[in-house]
Length: 251
Length: 251
Image (cartoon, chains in turn orange, purple):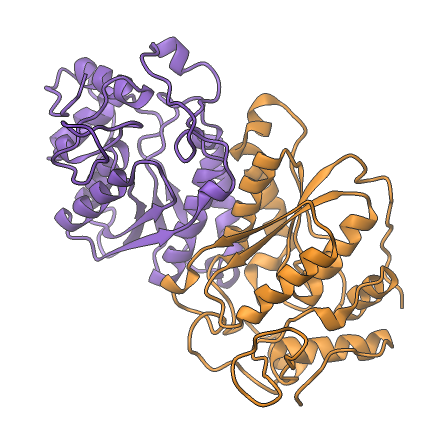
């Protein structure tokens, strides 16, 4: 099954965009999509005290390979708030099946994360003169995160247009694009593969490991754990897409 | 003229609130209001590379005096985006009259600042279990800032309820309170004075100075410049309220 996604190479011509890039599978696909549509992209990533600093390394590598106009990395300390396995020392759940993963708000939820990330993207867009912001959220695979729903993205866009100079001066309104919103992981992988994304460069594991143990330092040496929720969804996505999974898994 | 503001000492009883405190006149008044209504307050301030670090010192002092349950200070680097006299080396305008101040978006505008600040307040509220967020924005005196308008606050609240666990689980909805929104500076000063706020403790100048020159280090030594837009509005507010201005001005 192929996703119904039209890529218009002229849609972004002459337009600047800001894209949130995490180093993961989804946002790397969004970046490829936006560049295929001709957008001139500034990337935005966060050093937010995530346990997996290797994610940020992957984001930097991806930004360099994609030859972005600019890649801003903003340091914000979400650990001050607590409340999530992605920033705290709570055990990451392993080996859960699809039904368990989709049941309720996951322990890996970071409070208001997408709101904070999009707020910063809005600031960068305003400074850069960009009217288009892209984010790789996805309602199907991550139904447990409230800030990954279409209604959230729509409400953020409404708010953003009231928050900025664009809204006051009657300039081109801001659009928040979430092109993966209705796509399955398999569809995302199919689209990205068609666009030439090398998913071996992307890092989406909640608990990555080095071959000999220890803290991951380079993306090429790091193995995905293969067992956390993100790895389960990733593996299943490649299987369903019928595409060979290039991800190095530990398990 | 007295403001039409009812303070209900039971409204906040047994409720937690998050309040954005900047060390300035407005947010200090909001804090006094919320405490008078019985809210159990966690304060949130930002170290955002503002040129006037003394503002943050004032916020810390105010938080201690108000005996807040918690005062979180989040470091975020808005200077990376550029575009405002409050964080960059652009000259702060001096000696402008009221008409000039109200004409257009001021040079002191920070891109998406209130969106970013409220996004972080939302994260703290979620972790703290607070359903009430207070912000000292004001549509009358600062009409040039798009993110100080009532429509912005309303849209943020709608978005916030879709972004968080509250929205998903059908718990008590979040409310964004902007009690100063329709008040003049004189009204704000009247209300705060009635509540016992000592405005000499607050710091709202864009270009504060030490008596002998040099970088301000303590709030008690620092003088307001008396000439920037914020000082002009502050001075006029005390005059209009008929209240003696305790602010130490250099000019």
